[in-house]
Image 1 (cartoon, rainbow, N blue to C red):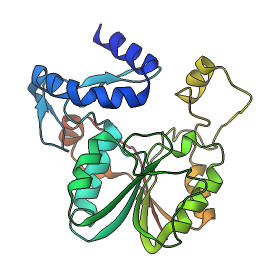
Image 2: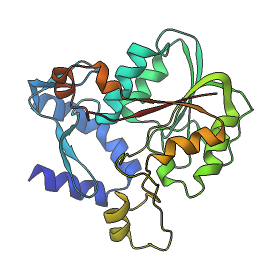
Image 3: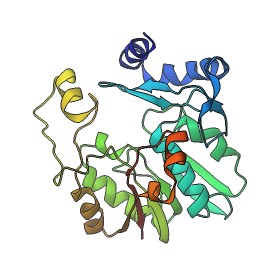
Image 4: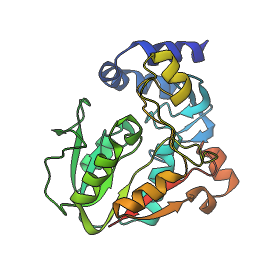
Length: 255
């Protein structure tokens, strides 16, 4: 029943409304589901279960009741915390479509000059098109752009803009929905029906399914790309406790 309720909510209520409502709902969910089986590494809280999530086929035990993080958010948090200077060094950071799990925490970090951007998100400081960004060349030490590029018709132009505004030596983390069994990226702009798009691309507002050639496309743009499987640095017990996707690749891109 919970699974069907969440599916209906995700597919009928506009995202900005969901974001605002979540601030009221989260404390209630966290209290109701408190337990010891799963832990959200972002805030350290533990629960007897995580919530289901997905616009089409729903995944069980993936949405944290406290931070509303998904598998990719928790994996990225662990990587940033353990493998980068994100929490210790003075950095100018640009975050596209900022996720609720991160937004308030990153805003409070005194070491960061933290700027958010998006066309529609109520959490964005700067309303901007990723294909035509109002920032200077070589401006940012780090860029976070996670599960954004699959929404962008001209992703080549978006990648070029990300490369342009990143400082030499800077890091861009560009997570995407992954099907690493697929060699070539698939897109078909003739498919316009929302249900058909959701079936083929995973969400109605996705314009492609990336394959392994995603990494080579970034390299052609000019990035040095490390395909980081950070789950290999974690134990099976940690992967299960944090509800991570084993084998998920973090594209860590350098200029």
